[in-house]
Length: 342
Ligand SMILES: Cc1cc2nc3c(=O)[nH]c(=O)nc-3n(C[C@H](O)[C@H](O)[C@H](O)COP(=O)(O)OP(=O)(O)OC[C@H]3O[C@@H](n4cnc5c(N)ncnc54)[C@H](O)[C@@H]3O)c2cc1C
Image 1: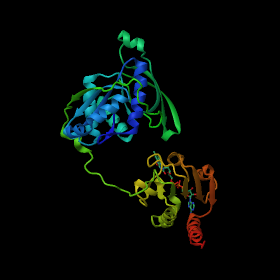
Image 2: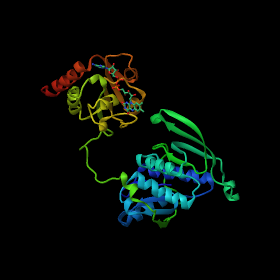
Image 3: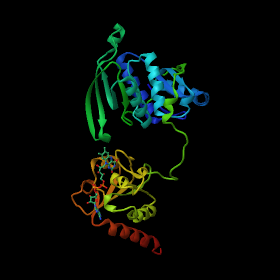
Image 4: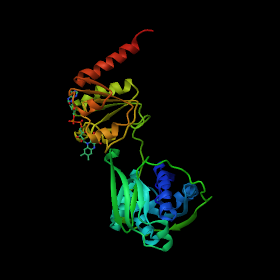
């Protein structure tokens, strides 16, 4: 089980995946061993804590891959280190969280080992049972897996035949639960993967804060614009409305494709998933790839000239009119009410 972490802080997804790995190990009659990647300084500072968390969630051993190229996250370096570990440890299955890092490192591992990867699993049933394990039956074989696709809108049943199943666990598909009878500590084993300089082609060099205060994923109000906004300048009234309501501006992919706004503002399958109190979707058709990012919104107001648009039919509230008239009118009304004496 790869425990993905950010400079020593395990991701919430990693704890969920450890919980899922524990259940899978129970079905297989085997045990969970954790793999952590970092450099000497990272393990000096966070090693004990990371090992303790892994043990609390059921890992009986913690393998710490140490290398200077693992000082911070890098998909090639993590994939290569994981491949080196798998090569010597010969596990029954390799599991990671379906987080950005977990998925990327596992994709790297799959490519390096030339094995299939099943991403975003919600249920995994191996054909190998505890009885097989005690009789020494070979690993691998056929696995029955349910996984989510299309950003959660599709549940797929998969039959996997592989000598070594590589699986990521869909975030939020299981609650992270520490193990009841967790050992007080896991056995810690250090290993030093042989990593060449080529694994440094993608790595974190620096970190900058892109936005102060609320983010798109935490904003209570999101005012989003789609192709119907018409231009980058057309977003000015949406910015104004978002500011009046204490929210953030989002957009559809048609907008980012046109270069009107940055990808950081994109809502959807390949953008940010949001869950505001109210989502105000202006000139957005509501294509499935956009909808999966917006469907967690508690209320939706669609402003669109097309009464048949998906976003309009899914919204709790809709205004069928030109957004260039409606959005400034809402701003004027908010200001008028705020400025009203008493
Ligand atoms: C693999 C993949 C991933 C994708 N990921 C994403 C994603 O993460 N996020 C995303 O958004 N899309 C994504 N897409 C693209 C998605 O399929 C749609 O193409 C996109 O969402 C459409 O954007 P839109 O609604 O702004 O544009 P359109 O579909 O062109 O809709 C424009 C809407 O504006 C309305 N309109 C026009 N003028 C006005 C006006 N003056 N006033 C009011 N309404 C008006 C129209 O009636 C229409 O409903 C993805 C696609 C693929 C294939």
